[in-house]
Image (cartoon, rainbow, N blue to C red; front, side, top):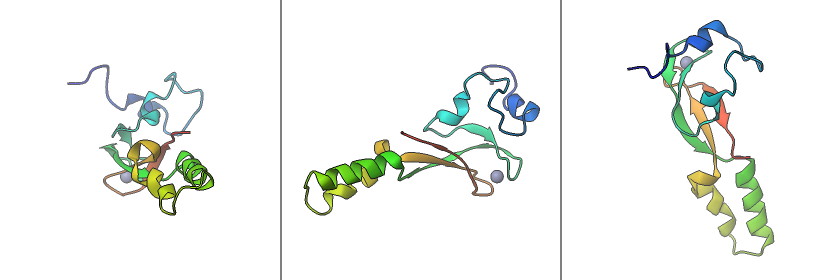
Length: 104
Ligand SMILES: [Zn+2]
């Protein structure tokens, strides 16, 4: 039961990433949750598989905690909190990373 129109239509009309595409704000590419997308590697319509990966924010917090003088080990806390990590979206078919949601 599609909410609006045909799923993936934009991808068919726009096979390459185009900044000024027909869709206004790239809503699907900026989500930390699994997203319906078209894999550019295998061409399948897929629901992305998300995985938390260390991002810029994670490293900044790690560095900040270290400089604040916390015990060794505290600086790795950001790496254990998904909310502080980037989210990598991968294709469940070919396992390629499609895009990454960045916290910063
Ligand atoms: Zn794929």
